[in-house]
Image (cartoon, rainbow over all chains, first blue to last red; front, side, top):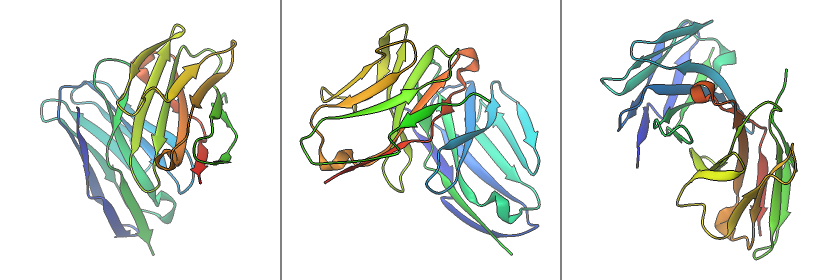
Length: 111
Length: 113
């Protein structure tokens, strides 16, 4: 079974600081997705990364994909409180029909 | 903006009872999925559905589970005889197939007593 690991699991960071969340996965895949989940809510799509070297940015978040290293990163720049949430990466194992989700990173941004 | 909807938002049932969770995917999507998330844990794949049949299913999706697309709009997940460990948030998702991006519904919280 494809394994997807994120680290850290919990992240408490101060406003205006930068940090990176890592997503490692165990098998070949060219497609990786980042989702945000607020407490008790559904999953909101943040980024779709479809090839090696893909980089996408939206506001204070930037995601990248290295398929050779089987690694994706989600970089947070100058964090603000509104970014507090749980972030999941998900890997499509190229079968086209299921996502394998990471363990999630619970981010808390403190003033 | 079109979105996936799910009903009910919260279902409480007794162990051994049957439950049906309902989803209305985004109208022009062709691929449909069910996932579950036990409280505080990661999201787990249950089943995918395309062209009126199951495409893939996980080990979790045993004989107690079934899915159906009874008409052109609804997509349902049935649990025949619920167990305590079925208590979880169940998410429906749909996608067009392009890049396999999946859009998730708000979820149904199932509580089995």
